[in-house]
Length: 373
Length: 167
Image (cartoon, rainbow over all chains, first blue to last red; front, side):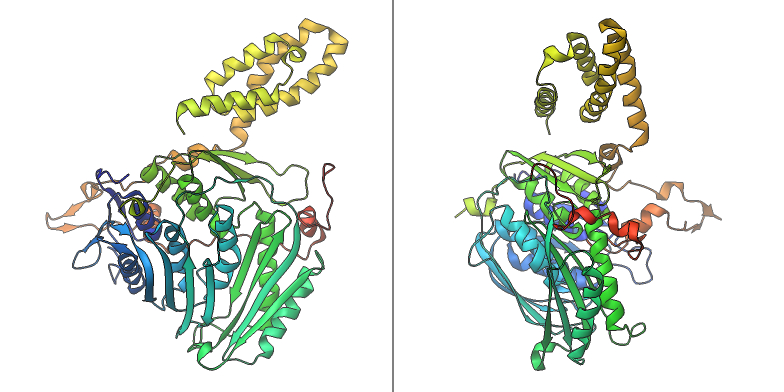
């Protein structure tokens, strides 16, 4: 696996995380050129530099070279080490940006990873820690990554622009991943949610809950939306509120949607009622897309299918997101894995849009760092 | 997937779809096996053929045994072509394009007075290369969830909806 084939070369800063993650897992070095080379402010941004520093912390012996303007990055991956790590994430992106990649890498560490991440817990761009906790963790459990130490704890909330949130993520290590056969999502039996508010009136969360329920109650009666109002040091440095909703099916599929208020000083003020209603509609969109994995976690599922034992894995997905499509291309270049992709038209059934069935045979990945004990 | 695995998988699918070959007749088997060689998209083809099998059962009763066998291969081929045109081939869309960065775009650049380069505006591809790295799949054309018919389109996704007979 660690044969030093010629390094893969890419251009542009998009998909930086998946390139570096796949490089780390496959052991192939990667070179990324022309990072914002035509931008007024060229080169890597703070949040990307912070991500690279995080990779350096959890690996051993990585070589990272960045040119003077920051437009070219060369990354030769080291071994995944893990252990106890602390990291201050950039407040330009939320912790979810970093956590998504950690979820891909954590099961393959030499020592189980326990990491404290500080920064923005909920923003409007990346999946929030609430959504990842409610959707990505159950997904990993399907692959046999489970146990008492498997946990994502939100200690403090922090909204942009100030941040100040803190989460603790710990993940056990696994030698092999179980292949999955997720072809039937089942039916949605309940909807759960989390309405949070920090440094604003606690009444905001209640207003969100009422408006979201008014839409979702037409579909299913079993709805419970928790309100979470953190105070004092636990509420971070900026005011804000938001909602995340998760629909759970009879077969253990979790579909999610979320919205957060505009950051302080940016854009117009959002009414909690509007936010609640719009978030509920987003959840309905996600249900319309459907599949056994929600749209943010598509690539995570496909990665673990690729890295699983040499056995057939199948998963039914909704329409593939642009991020997932690029991820499939990257999986092909790093692991020489091509998926069998079949469209499943929705037909006459009242179950939303067309679905895609993805099938592959795992490469039988076993982490290199564990064999070198 | 190696080609071997794909082949064996195709055969699996084939066997599942045709548990009783005697019922179908050997002529059709041969035809569809030819078509496997021609195309990789076997599943769609078989689906189409199944549809046609039902139609043809009807003609069996009225027109006799040989007639429907003659028509079958042509119909299957046509159906396959139609299917190919109607649905974009996802496999080709995803894996067909070159994803690694294409070298030397500078060669095509004009020079002014042998000194200045004309900086070409970023094309669509370049724009994508430097855009935001985000895994979320934002909804571009939201449905109007206040409409009854839109609400009905996901009715059976819930436990309150209609259940399949086998559950």
